[in-house]
Length: 180
Image (cartoon, rainbow, N blue to C red; front, side, top):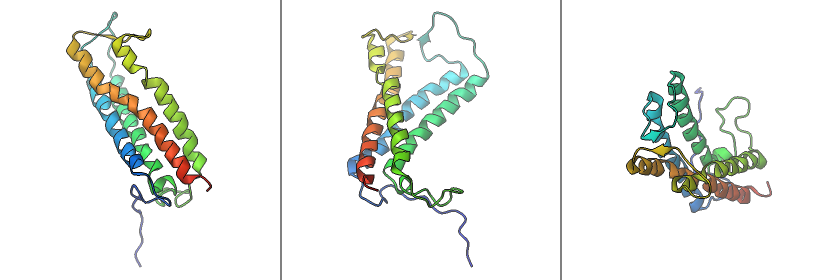
């Protein structure tokens, strides 16, 4: 007799109803859009300012390392959660999860948090281009040179895609799961 202690998680595209190809591609783009900002923020953990100029010098503390690395890991983890909207594990909880494994995911249990998260991301990040351009009353921290500002913009502007892509994925998930 053989016991299976862990079951592999379902892969993308193994859903009850077909997932549009654009939705699968969008789910793949989200973690890639978040990654540059996660990498860009890592030097801040070690008190390297990445060309930012502050009016008042900030004191560095040891816990900043934990905060910055934790924020980067949390951001990427949340970005990877978007795969649940196009994968079977977004419809049925993987069986290796204690107590709830193997149960169907109620559509609203995914739709409501994903919608609120997407709207929150849009509110948080989609004014970022205005800050880099200093228009519309949005101002950001100064940079010691245009190169540093360009690097910051290149690393952080892809975050503006996260909210709209997640909202589109949530709508596709809603359409696919409608009537269940």
